[in-house]
Image (cartoon, rainbow, N blue to C red; front, side, top):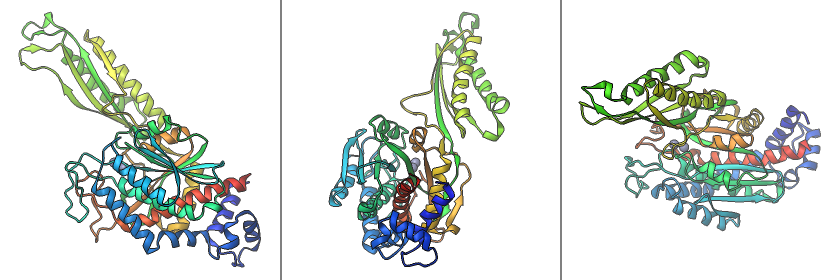
Length: 443
Ligand SMILES: [Zn+2]
Ligand SMILES: [Zn+2]
């Protein structure tokens, strides 16, 4: 089926109650194709929002977020957080797999048959001391949910509640992925290794942001978030007396030349429209002012929006450091995949899923609340899923200057505007429901 017709029909499901006379043909078709409209006297949009915004649901979502906020857990340590998720899934009689990638939870709702569509939330907190004084402040010193992952979990549980009530109408299966270790850039990779994307056709992720106003959905087709790469290099020379330089092979000269040459990659070689970045941030070596050290280490980060530039940049960094080391008679070891700082590829939204997400979002939050986001220099490990299957990351805005929701993620003053949480749940649920319906209509 042609995409625009398909979208039109799906929009009619979202907007129109079965009694509407404005589109009799579509309603005739929809009541045949969509059992939902046969026995619920409201549109899908109204039905989803009525569950999400019901005071009991909204309070429940908020309380889950607060409970998780009080006990933040770092990457791959999300034991308590995943027990909260499992407790709530069990209360709703939703089946799940656990543990996946140490602490992850994967739940399923629907027919158990294809097509499968996935919704993803991340669970981990940051090693940060919360400086916000409030009733539900972090009870763990030095750890804080300062990126909204507590809220992401709560929103996805809210979606689970909505989808469970629509379960008999789902035209396939929704896979709910609660993953660990997003901040370390390793959680998604590990979840994929454990097969969470098996048979899954598309994936959708939401991240709360302060760059958009409360209730605004902001996203972008194609290259959205930058890839974040890290490199570490050790350059080996031959130490000696600094007063007799001909007796040593000086790794400090090789590191200095490498740093200058790395800057030239960006200024002379890269496509300026791709705005790549290469920064050397650490140089360590030497301990005495009159002794040439045996080796010097250096480390830094690189960013790019296109996958081609990102992967080429990593290889070029390796090449430049190795070449400069050998110019100065040194040897070198360059690591692009360090355990401390794993690389995350660029987040590239699939155009078809992006269009679907925007159409569904505009029904839920209104067209005036949809923004085309500029590219964003941060990275997101949803990118790993998007390298395997089509999908989309969308931002859900929560900025409210008057109410004080202004502090950016990873700030010790970060606060979540809990009013947007039901909207997040509704977006997740509507995205999955209509995706499955689309697939039915397409076949
Ligand atoms: Zn973060
Ligand atoms: Zn985050």
